[in-house]
Image 1 (cartoon, rainbow, N blue to C red):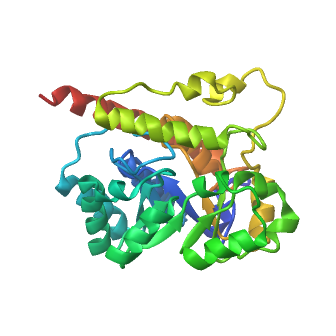
Image 2 (spheres, rainbow, N blue to C red):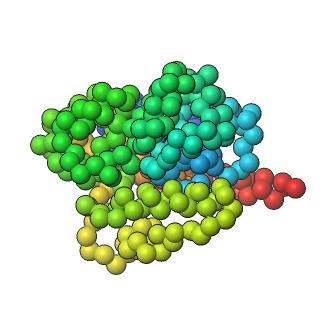
Length: 323
């Protein structure tokens, strides 16, 4: 009788030859590393995570407000960055605030993190030119990435616009709506481009820019301990995801086939979002976009859920033990 076996090596990969940028830094990086180790042990396949991104509570953070900060000390922050580097993964600080003034560049916590990133050889994701210029001038060892937030405020995203991003940054993120414009994608620089896989908003969302601006205001309210939250998500009809339970239209998360088509065009860096997701949701996306879908993914994800559960239990124990 034929004994079915799990795929091994590149046969276990959904998109052989591509790399990934994933969340988890200052959030659940250890669980990401557990996942990588377990996939390697089961399939003899190393998921090629090139970048891991995130941020502690700092005024320059955006994209997702940091609602919970674990009181990271300078030593803890260095350990987070160094832990990624030790695995050959470049850590990226998400300093993607879209609105700022010159005086904001003096933020001591942000500059302390920049000094650390510069010393270790980490990277930073930015969306405001002031911060980008500040980093280029004062922290030359930092790898600078252009945030997807930049594209939310750009009306004409033509090939020249993307060529400018490719010229000025080590990496840039394509606006999620443009993932479906194959004619445009064939004309833009691909060697520095990054494709978001699991964007769960709707196509041509009219509130995208307002969403990012609301996140900036909410982050400031958290840090200042005063002021009111915007309540933007309370009014948004699509985010969080549970609001899509009764909709008939799909969101713009790419299918496995769509992702493979973009990989076939020569795009080789794919990004996953998920800094506000519960780990079960993020790792569902992470694994379905990295592992072969017919056998490898369904064989691995349910088993890894037990690791997620144990991780969450241990985290809860540590929180209770804190004075």
